[in-house]
Length: 231
Image (cartoon, rainbow, N blue to C red; front, side, top):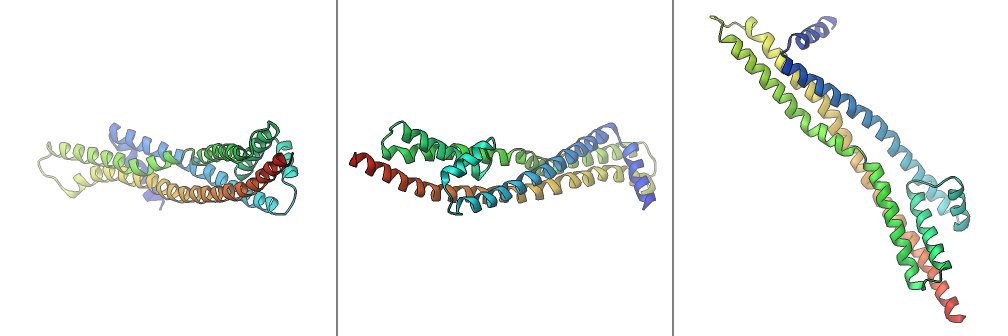
């Protein structure tokens, strides 16, 4: 095993400058994508946990005003909590301003939609980079492979008799670029698909909550309208 590692290292050292540059780019792309993968894993796990915790509090039957004040006291919320917080705040502000009841729900829904879009943008941050690494790395590796093979054949032009021992090192150097490309591309591509699916599922949960919360606010708006008419 140690001999294989040393031979690969020797191939990288003996490769042409262009191939070495390709390998350096692929290595940097792999390191960067792994940093994104590990960071995004934590962010999405936290978002899912926060959504579960908030839904438990929201549907516990407690006072929504108390829930809002609790979130506000913590300095604001993220995820589903932020959607609730902005929607509730806008609804209360419009009601105190004497806005007609039929406009209360519309204003609250706009505020919730803005909060949802910001949250989805936060969750999707850097996912495009993973997609780029996953799709572009094989082509970068292919370029390095083709360049290395071209260099090998050019070198063979000055040799009277080509043998396997003559050709093998150059071909092996070129194929190292393909190997590096796969190492960079496969984890990034898998992570992108997995995380994009998780973001999509969270977005569906946010949409469902917005509809359910809008129904509750609509009932409050109807009461406000009835009170105004009675007054």
